[in-house]
Image 1 (tube, rainbow, N blue to C red):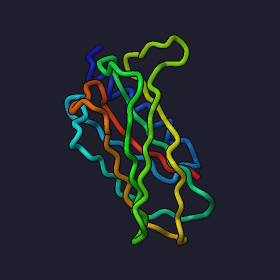
Image 2 (image 1 turned 90 degrees about the vertical axis):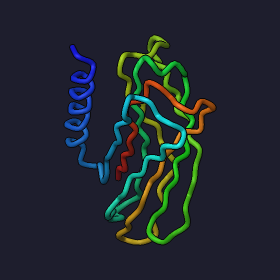
Image 3 (image 1 turned 90 degrees about the horizontal axis):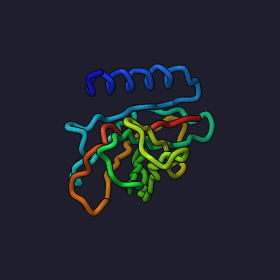
Image 4 (image 1 turned 180 degrees about the vertical axis):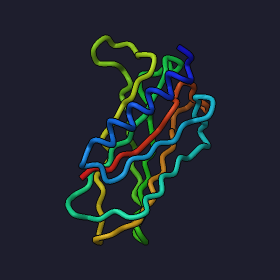
Length: 150
């Protein structure tokens, strides 16, 4: 099967599955052109409005291929809600497959990000993510996304 068709089918299946989850308040991802992430590329996720009905939880998602040769991925996750202060955290994703310690052809890794601390009932925000690995270009990263759940 063609690699791009397989990536499209995988992304579609993940979107269908995520649509079935009632607790999802926001979910978006960015596809990286050429399946590589440049150090200067900051991915920005604009959140129109979140209603604070209960505490919210942020998860960062990364999809890789076997061209990503590292076991870990270091990220900066920056949150800004309303006119509030910007909150920046470091996140290190362990990309090893726990069952056989090898990477599968397409691998989606989710990792809990620091909590979201909203102060009002409705809030607009922005989440920005960039990598801080030593290498300028990271081949084998196809998509990066965020999910906010209740």
